[in-house]
Length: 103
Image 1 (cartoon, rainbow, N blue to C red):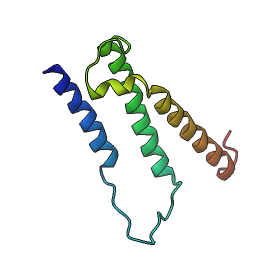
Image 2: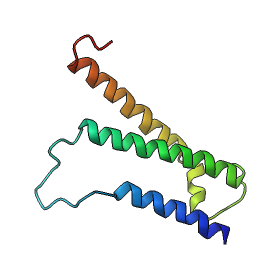
Image 3: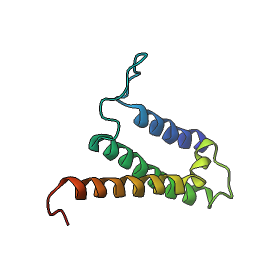
């Protein structure tokens, strides 16, 4: 029963990732693929992923106990951390280049 409840967290996370997304028609591309808004959304999802990684480590005893599909978060915490820092640095570089006397 507890494995099913933990799987609900994974499903909710996946729904959160695709909330508000839309499928582009053939030949269409994003107008601003590296916009500030998209970077902030990816950064927020990575932050939530890091929190889920730490919660999963606590629940599974750092991967010793298998708790179903949520156990995958034991292994991919470094991915979420990397995404978060990449987009933080990207935002900093863009701000330095576009804003006068930013630093």
